[in-house]
Length: 264
Ligand SMILES: CN(C)C(=N)NCCC[C@H](N)C(=O)O
Image (cartoon, rainbow, N blue to C red):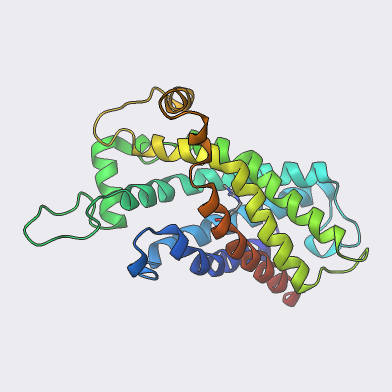
C-alpha cells in the first residue's frame, strides 16, 4: 500500500489547519494558542482522508497517483473513493472533534480568580473526564452524525476538486498552482455547504449527555431542532464554515499536490 499520500495528507492537513485555526476558535485573542492538540489530531485525520482516498482509487482503477493525469478516473470512482475516505476519517475524527466541541462550548475557557475552575482543563483532562463520566462509548458521542456528515460530503469534496482541475487544465497535464488553489478552495466550500446541516446536528449530539440526555438519536435531534428553531437551523454557521473552508483547503490541496510531485 503506497504511504506517501498518508504523509502528504498529514503535512498538508497541518498547514491548512494553521490557516483555519483562527476561524475555528471564538476566542479571537488566543488566535494561535493551544495549537498542538488540533495539529496532532487534524493532521492525523487528514492523513487518513487522503491516504484512504488515494488507495481506494488505486484499488478501483489500478492507477497510482502519478498515472491519474494521463488516465483520469471516472467521477463515480472519485466519488466512491471520497466517500470511503470520509467514512474512515470520521471514525478517527470522532473523539478529537468531541473534545474540540466540548472545550469550545465551555463558558469559562480559563480559570478565573474566585470562580470554580472550568469543567475541562485541557484536551487530555477533557478526554479523561468524558471516559470516566460517560464511558468509552461517550468518546464516540455524535460519531454517527459525523459519519453521515463526512461520507457523502468528502465525495463531493473530491469531485469538485477534480472537476475544476480538469476544466482548467489541458488534457494529460498537471494543474497549475492557481488552478489547484482555486479548485481546492471551492472544493472546501462545496463540501462545507453540504456538510453544514449535519454539522449543526453533530455538535448538538456531542454536547448532549453533558448533564442529562435530551436527544434519542440523530433523527430525534433533527426533528426537535427544526420544530423549535425552524429550517434555518440547518444553515447555522454556513458563512463562517465557507470563509474558513476556502483558504484551508486551497493550502491543503496545494501542499498535497506539490509534496507528491516532489516525491515523484
Ligand atoms: C465535513 N467536510 C466538509 C469535510 N470533511 N470535508 C473534507 C475535508 C475538509 C477539511 N479537512 C477542512 O477542515 O475543511
